[in-house]
Image (cartoon, rainbow, N blue to C red; front, top):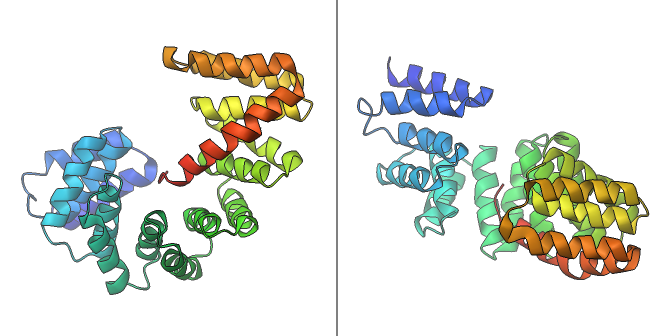
Length: 279
């Protein structure tokens, strides 16, 4: 198997979500292609998807050390090390965007990086360019929403993140962020359905379950509120017990105590943390 055949097969597995098979395939051939940055990069992607973040970081680092020229490898590996605040991330992402201005993913990942590093104006420019290159990409729409929010444009943020949910209705992370944004904007009736749907899409996400529970209570759907609480309790760890108990106490108190916890504490805290994470 030559390099092109190997990468084609690996990326086909990625399209199918077969991360374990992809990782095994690339590891089996790593010795033959030790000096090929693409092999290290895509192996890092597979291992990251399998929850092996530390190992994946080393793969991305190795890919960059080998001096890749492929903008997809530069952007992907740069994004991979950016999650660990690696100072080499900026150069890799910038190089990808500058050398391949017509590659949407390069502009996307550089723009997302700039935005989260505080260069929001520059990040918006990159994300707008990415959107023009690929207007149907849900991730671009989501990152554009993040950038608009951080730029002080909450209405524009809601529009962009809402578009992301229309482009990919099964992405629970994005739908949860949309629900939080709508609640922060005072649009409770619109936000509650998104929070409930996000909780259903992300059954292991405790914050999503508890936010949906409180929002449902505030909206008058008490049975739904208790259902969401129990779903959260089912997956809660011992460390989460106090959080679950606090939500239960507010539900017992009714809509106003639930509104206080939801709007004064949970929404602003969770929304800002979620916006700083690259899903």
